[in-house]
Image (cartoon, rainbow, N blue to C red; front, side, top):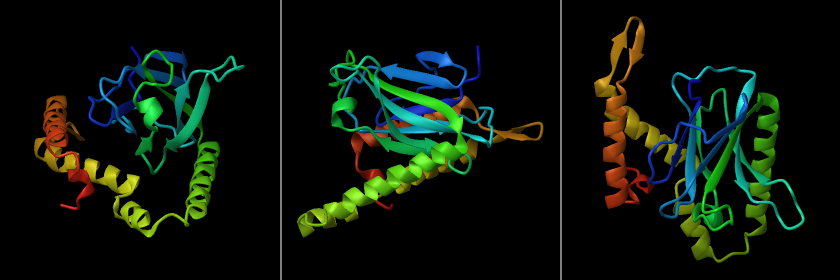
Length: 208
């Protein structure tokens, strides 16, 4: 069995590492039924995944074909690669709730593509988001203040990683010259982290 390359972490769910389908050696599909709604998913390279600095992983939300189409729709969400091993992506309410007609499944595609191409598409996505934000400046000041108070996706990702690092640092050991952390320790971190998310869903939004 090939070594898994990516981990997917839907908000409030266990980590997913095994693709549902592997259409090619460079493309992977992860389909799973949401037992409860969520709107964000983290995607990251697994520690033992082989890496190539010339490629990056493009992340897609796959939805059923539109009327008159044959092929499914692939919405580009962003990418991860050299210098950015993980990221959190917003899916949108319809996909996250399983209400997109895909048999109740959320379907994420991960494709290894030239790093330059993925980087260019990420920049285009950021520019489009900035333009959309500029066009909505006429919204009420109360809404703007509320949005400004919400931490960015990058900040949320950094806080999740910091939480995991602080917990797992006490379990690290060495195997030869390589520093390792037992899988059981990661599972224990996830159990506690998930429990805190359930009991206090907004704790990541606070700079504790």
